[in-house]
Image (tube, rainbow, N blue to C red; front, top):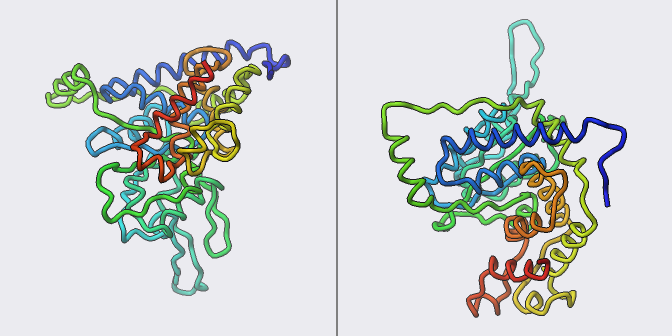
Length: 332
């Protein structure tokens, strides 16, 4: 079991103070995004864990507003790219232009694209060609881009919240498995309940405009991200993560249902994601260490985009979420 470092006597109050700030950030975001508390929570977990998220939901569920709001609340520079079939890699990462000033030698200057921001919304990422998708996903993994042999680092922190419409698939380019694996979480954005939608009607159709408050700075967020990695993880939580992820892989004999219904399962990156996200969820709740309940709660968003149903499973109408839910039952 990892333990809190003994060299820092102030780590417990630091964790408590960070938890209080993050809870305040959650309340600030929820004050303008109605009925999406779990989406906000999982988005904050993604950012605290230093990763990227894929938001799946129909249009009109405040996904764009979520990114703008989180950018304001967390003190991050936020930008948005609308992905379309004619979008080029240079529209994302930027391009070199030739400068020809009188009396001076011609030279190339790199003009940075919108990817050079701290919080990027990639709207309908599956509508761009695979070549354009890869330009973004390289930066997500390596935190830099290379243009004409020159390396250009993305800002720190750097997070991508990409969206997909689950309904309309005509004219789209589905993300390959290797690229899906670069997203820490898949966050399903559903319709708000009637109470939240009623509040939304009153709040968004009146004459007053509610402005979200600034809670953290980028430097404070980075410090909190470092703090997340210092949270101790009990041995039983580590064993629960290993048991769950390995049971989700077909061909290992760990689970008969997996062997029958899963075509390919999660790799070691899923275990890493569960460990980081469990720590982030614990801090967000004000706890000093994650529990097995955190692993169970995060199993679906961590594993769903890292697994695929077999032909037999699709023929029988099996649901990937239900299979993951049954896998988590062995952890309870």
